[in-house]
Image 1: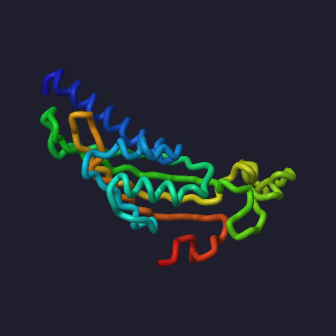
Image 2 (image 1 turned 60 degrees about the vertical axis):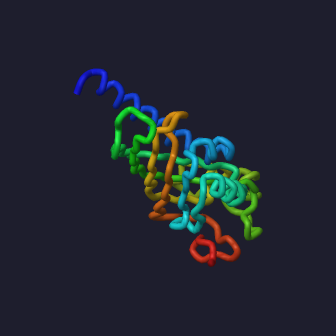
Length: 190
């Protein structure tokens, strides 16, 4: 490889890494217009393994906006990013596949649980209660819900730069610290 080709490969990897970071930030900040712009025309996302939907970037953005409204704090940690190029000719249409693990703690927007009970982050937290002995996080900042798994991203080089063609969420685990009405083990009933 020439130095020019090696530099181009590094720049592509940095651009794709930035795309994945922008994805996490858009979801965490609720920037749904920004989320939509990350997708190439015809781009799709699949959240079915996490109890969600599959659809266009715009359809999934609308669904996420509705579903994540109850969480005032979201923090995607997307790590162990593996980037593989299927096609890389330094031109529109180049394809990259990205595998990345995620952990996502979230906290309810309301200080009371959806089931009406107080608890960590509920009214008792306002009175100075903390988590059980040994916890490092005060109750009012502890997550109410956590999930983790793996993303499979497919990115395509467009005239606007690298954009998402496909996002598939493979949820591997979840833990909630309250019981939501109408759910079993935290998953929406179908």
